[in-house]
Length: 261
Image (spheres, rainbow, N blue to C red):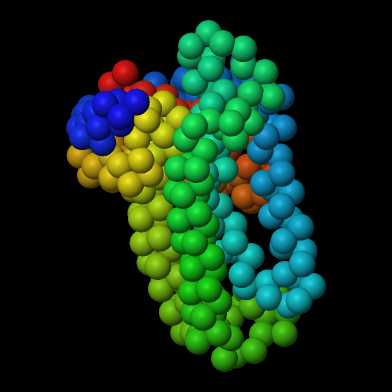
């Protein structure tokens, strides 16, 4: 065991392939195939995300902090890779020809990598709450000074005042920065932790390398995911129950194309 540990400590980081737009298409096709094969499992796993969003949104409206609803919905993109961990496991099992009933999505809690997965997950949650705090501060420093007394007044102030314009521009720039950091650290970290014995730091470093060595393809992937999450969020977040499982499965197949078996 000591010898094996020494080998693991000094093992090189995983090799990274160069991918193109065709690989993104195939990852999406494979993710959609997984979703068709396991639709009830995927919806079951992801239904609580839009439900949680609706519940939290209702609480926020009750306490008159509706301006945080958009940052909250956008924040799902930051924690999405962690939330989809069970979907990666189902895709992994289907790939190996193993039983992929929905109960196996919770096998990650018995995985030897569960604590390393939790480390990366806690980091993403920290990014999520930091984003919400900055969004709250930005609102208070811009539109908040106008003291809108209703959701309608808030929307009007955002699109018709200079303060609203400042909040819109800076909010999107800051949100973009958070999204880039989150995606770079996590896009293949969780699949890698499920698939190989690596540390959380090695998984995140490999994920960052994969993004920057395939900057064009991964930029397009990020834009596709962002657009899909936006569309899924429009009907009271209910569309996320379909969007998130498809992209959760697709991310596993993207990982397979980036990291050789």
